[in-house]
Length: 310
Image (tube, rainbow, N blue to C red; front, side, top):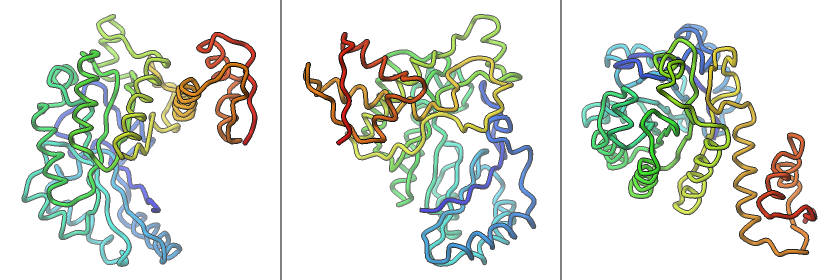
């Protein structure tokens, strides 16, 4: 499916989370110009008449925008949409109810992504998310019961996380079975309240290795549960000058794939037998100065690994 992204940085968010600076993350400094948006969308839709498409509103809390303003935003867009074009929105769990979902059906919203970030009360409170675990679970269930496609966003490394909170998150994912998941390990961005906690030593950011390991745990859960994991790591257009700490790397998603491959190789490894891989898999191990090839050697306690392309 083709996606046309529209960024609404922090639009109608009910509060500012401890870690948040969506302008820095998305690279979008302001709301889009309606006329420019309509013109660009019309060209996009014309070029792709025969392909399934979504216009996706990212950032902010779409359903927290007053209904009149939502309708005004969509008014120039809806007439342009053909029968195989739908809308995708991202929103806050507290702004999901029966009235909002009934409205969403009238404007051809198909997919609703919920910025859950974590399913445990302690972590949500420490991160100033403004809702409880039960609120998050209720919102997910309502979206699914109303037959929308459900997406969930989780954020490893939030203040207050523990091994127990990780287990609770994995259990919730298995039980709720969203259609897809995004995993955004937490980054410390200059100018946020989290930055002050980090500077004072109150908060410790995840290392790159920790974040990759936790992300791949989610990847393995998704593969076992039939959930699509559609994104790991923040966008590479993040202003790196504003990153103070945390596991940000432009190749984070590739590292996660390589870590997952190393785990799979270790399960089937036979000493003195070549490891048969696809060409793309070899690239994962040998890229970035053989980073994950060396990790594989270290974990297998051998330096006699032979890779062969199938």
